[in-house]
Image 1 (cartoon, one colour):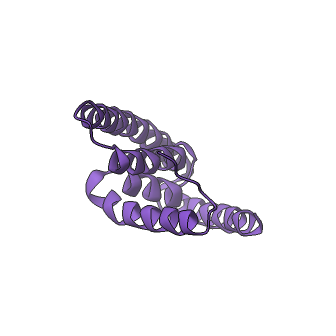
Image 2 (cartoon, rainbow, N blue to C red):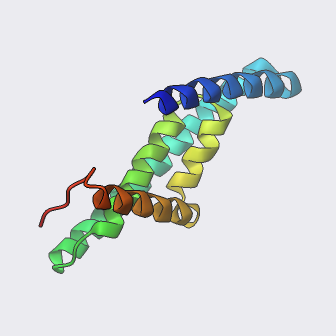
Length: 128
């Protein structure tokens, strides 16, 4: 929990620094416009990707297959949407990376690795 608090504090400080830096380059009102536009575009993309992932998971389940990969996709899309909803250039960049399918793959592998480690430590219990 301490690490999460530290990460949030550092991220907030970095975002403020980037706001000031970009605001000095393009002006404060343009910064506000860019943040609003990336939020809107990101949320539309997250909704589209989320629905597509949901439909692929349903199709997989109707064929009798476990939707494990689609669950990881859904987690990435959800986290990306939260980052896109949070104002900031750094969080928007990470959010887009998590939502776009091509750039989502490295994150999926990391999440799968963390989940496996948690299952091995019995932090997460998986039952069939």
